[in-house]
Image (cartoon, rainbow, N blue to C red; front, side, top):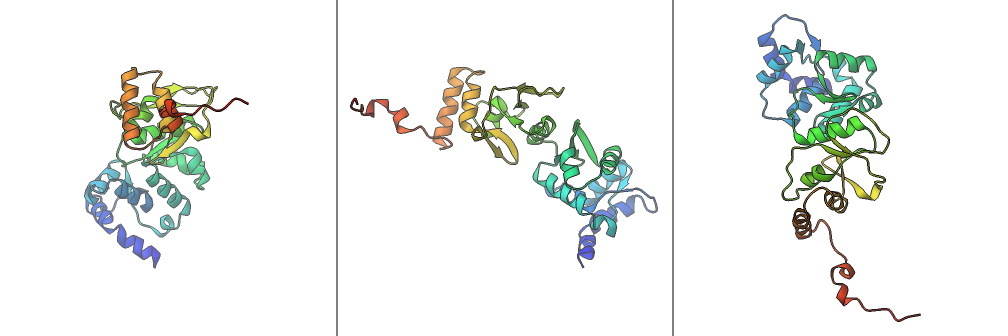
Length: 248
């Protein structure tokens, strides 16, 4: 019953494939990956999606074996929550074998963005996807920070186009983007936005103070106060109102 429902769900892609390459045999692409692409970018038509797959020598074959493949299902669901990207560690944890990973990379179903970080082919390329892919490539503890974090939080004057991270000290990898290695980055200074690990508003304000003019920091502070992303304790905001404690 479930299998027949899924087969009906992919009929439009299947018809487009059959109309373009009738009788030709291709590498199977799991249905779940097709659904993820449609979920991320729903305006892609079935004929266009089918044409893309065929251009890479693949098909969206709706066979029962693919539907029962729980490992690929888990990876597809994970990628849908992560801007269409995943890490090799994620895939292995979901139960995908190293051989399957290599085959999907070789056939273009997954595209390598960094060593060990992949993009589900067909998902839209976005700045947020680039940020998360960089974090996955640098590994656990890597977070978006400084000017990239300011842009992610929507601070005025910061553009959503750079990749800038803070990573644990001592970690050396030849990846593109600006990288900082702070002496410490406590868990309280890290949060997530749209599945992307990022420094908190307060920590981001501290970080950008070292790399942008003071007036830019002041404007950012005014903005986050107005949006109530942070608050200033009354004792700090109005020191003149504090009452002196009697000496002991």
